[in-house]
Figure (cartoon, rainbow, N blue to C red):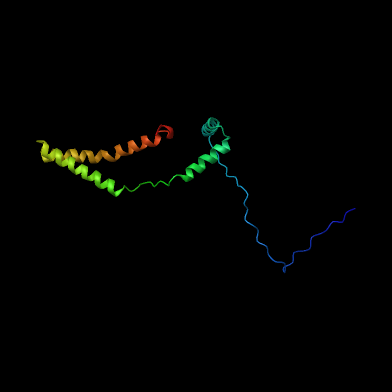
Length: 134
């Protein structure tokens, strides 16, 4: 019968060894509603990948995209050009028409009230266009 060795009791004089950091891959899981699971499965099948491969690739692509701020700052040069064009158009309308100043100001005020909504609408439409169509 083989002899079983009993490990020695822990000795306080024994050197403390720090565990090495793990280089093993780790799993991150998530829960999805059935409709999203079907969408992921369909996308993976179209790509010829497993769901795990497709999701990993999608995550890595997302991480490589530049971070988007909620409100981005406009490019100063573009903003200056747009404001210059706006002033030019406003002055041309006022000079080339017999419209009273109040009417020109009402037109400008109306443009000011709708410009942000229109810009957001256009940007939203551009975000909704699939990447292949761009």
